[in-house]
Amino acid sequence: MVSNRRLQIVADNHIWGVQRACSTLPGFNVDLQAVEAGEITRERLQKADILLTRSSTRVDAELLKGTNVRFVATATIGDDHYDKAWLQSNGISWASAAGSSTGSVVEYMTAVLLELHVRGLISIPDSTLAIIGVGRIGTALAGMCEKLDMQLLLNDPPRERAEGGGRFSSMRSVLDEADIVTLHTPLLRHGGDRTLHLIDTEWLSRFQGRGIINAARGGCIDNRALLNWLDGDVERFAVLDCWEREPDILKPLLAHPQTVIATPHIAGHSLDGKAANTQYVYNALCSFLGIEPAWSIEDELPAVEEVEQVVADDGLWGSLHALATTLYPIMQDDRVMKSWLGLPDDSLPDSFSAFRRNYPVRRAWKSGQVTVPNAGEMLIQYAHAIGIDVQHSRR
Image 1 (cartoon, helix red, strand yellow):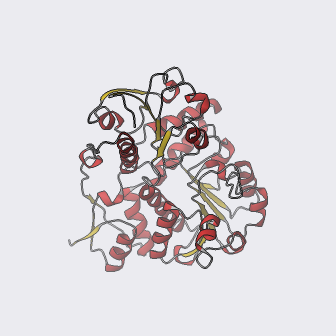
Image 2 (image 1 turned 135 degrees about the horizontal axis):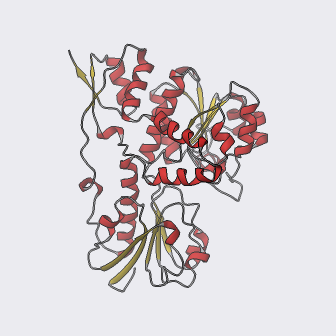
Image 3 (image 1 turned 135 degrees about the vertical axis):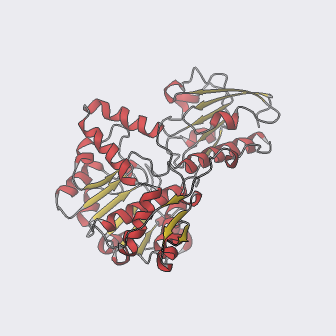
């Protein structure tokens, strides 16, 4: 616990609501400096007690050695930009927002699957989806897919070792049996469970399916190997939200016609997800300081107006797609990102970063209600299964 009642906090100013959440903390005289990520330097941190970041700030000895910082937290679900071993060995407590954006990512994935279905790239009830990485997001995604009657393969070696076989599939089964693979692992650079370039040239040469989705970390897939794999068969496709070397991504991969959905690392960027990130960080900070939380996202999030969507008679999956598209038009994000292909190469990284910082408001599906004229019971049942509150409306 920080003993000095004066508390200096340096925070990335793109953490949603950070000034409202952290500028007043019970029992402390807070000096909060909310700055751009590029302004988070060792010099600025010399007298800081607390550092709150996003994924663009590498937190390690180079940044923190010789400073007064004793608690750091990232308002992101990933924490591979933190040198956790160094932090622990130097008595610096740390926290992440792991789990905060789970719902947003699952909604993103649901929108992806429905988009692929209506475009004829997959058949949801007839395709086998392999989920590599069955943590919070992978588990929630599996539950949603089961409600849609998808065939699933779950691959998670650490969990399989801890829990035993039966539920989990080997990588060989994934390679031989999956039609589509989706990644939901952390980025681990070393060790037996290393995920850096988990999907590489050798892996892709053995894969019998035709679709790859990455909403995990960009480095889990060798992007050049993926580009070559797409070139090898016109029936193959990729959906990418995460890219190697963000924001300086591989432009030919973005331009490839078989990169059918491309988004700039925004799967978890619903307003509710970003707010939950801040809530996780705020709660962790309060726990470190030994105080009771006094701020809540429930007081901050705006009310959501009811959405009315007339669903055309396009069958169950087409109607579900129409509902999901009303709440989250994922292809708008794809069109924005692909519009950057006309920019000079050195401008694309700035566009990538700026779009993430200024992402349009996207609310969680549970926050709204969709009124559907003459909705059938089957549509309502499946819509509720994927988290959309559909109500009857008769005309």
